[in-house]
Image (cartoon, rainbow, N blue to C red; front, side, top):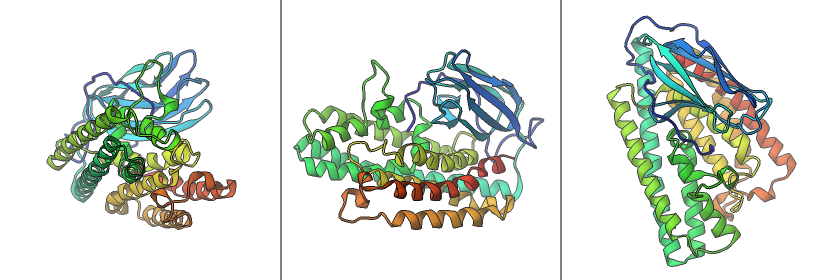
Length: 384
């Protein structure tokens, strides 16, 4: 999950299949280079583009305190890349309408850079537009289901903590985690809410209260106690209910096709981002540092990525028919490798992270990278 952020209000919106037609930057994606340095912070070149498809190429040159870059509009993250350590390059693609946006790099010397988009993106029409809208509606339904399923174990966790039942609380914690991990990119698009729910201890800023799943995890699995967790559990339930409210609003906007709901490029970036998340935190054991159920989260991230990709398959079949079978095969291979680590006797149903050897981690990493390479191409393809 991402480090804590606070997005300023901006104007501007993503465009979906119902974007208004006019002159803009449609056609080949415009490229914006975002350079992150210790001296100058986060600098975009150019900082003004025409509406339409835009690809952001990001390079952290030497900024040790910066690991993330976000494109923000109206208190929502439209695109982001995390784990941008010095020397690391990354990219993401979006399709955006005219308006005022913000490039936000938490911890940079200059954290916020205004970014302007002129004109309006041309309308996507015909069968492809229908398929992209269908993908967005299907994905909205998937997210709604996962958040609804999440509510039950989180309330079970709250009750077990109130009852002082350590074993029941540990079981409820493990039961809840996959539902959140499958839709993590959506949660992360709300920059104040995700840190309240899923911030790891290493990302807590000085003077900031640590809340959400992970302080509860630390108490349950490292300290072996439910004492003092009632307020944290109550807040976690309230924050998940707020997430349900916000995702419900996104779902309604998606069905209305008003440009304020889920966008196909977000779904594509999210599919890729979930595998990035596995590579950067699950495979390293950072996510579940106390419970050691990292492979449970790993599998949930993979499932969420696969579901996001699946909603886009019909549209991708029109855009690039060779890409879909390649990605599908690599997903099958990854799932087959991951299945070797199922363990019904272990908490969450997976081998504890501490039991993995270096060879196990390499095998999992290689299978992940084999999916990630072709999957990372889909956002750029659907924004054209």
